[in-house]
Length: 111
Length: 114
Image (cartoon, rainbow over all chains, first blue to last red; front, side, top):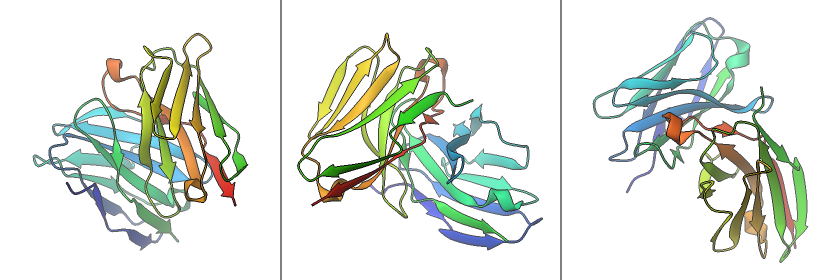
């Protein structure tokens, strides 16, 4: 079974721009969660989608948003990028409420 | 507010030794405690997980010990190997409360020396 895939793997943007990241979960998994990983703050939960509905949300500003499609694929969007948004963005999928499997991440650099 | 505290920040162990990483949590609603291993440039990989109804779980060289009353859990890596050198994260979530939100510890960089 293929693992979680994330595209693109690397991204360079400038301040003020917006960015969209994509995540394809493991086949059959209906839950997709997003996390931000930085050296200073560690791994922080952004939000979770299950059956196209946001089920949980972390403490991030409204510039961070997401959505899930009927095939369980998910996208997250960050608008008006700031330097502090530079991070590894990780997507994790699970069947329902249980084990989460992470993708390789998208490395976002904001200049 | 950090809800999962992890120690030590870094650890050096000799090959064949035992690596021990500790975590403590605050939220008594947590009911699922996984450990993840992360290599540079990769996403975290699930190693082993435990629910609070058991005090220990073993999978191969990896063992989780869980102390519900102390709100602490730990990862033991037996017969540590150089290939185990990675960053380890403990985490916790409240599956019973709905959803898969994981709260992570700050990570432990493990180095296994020959």
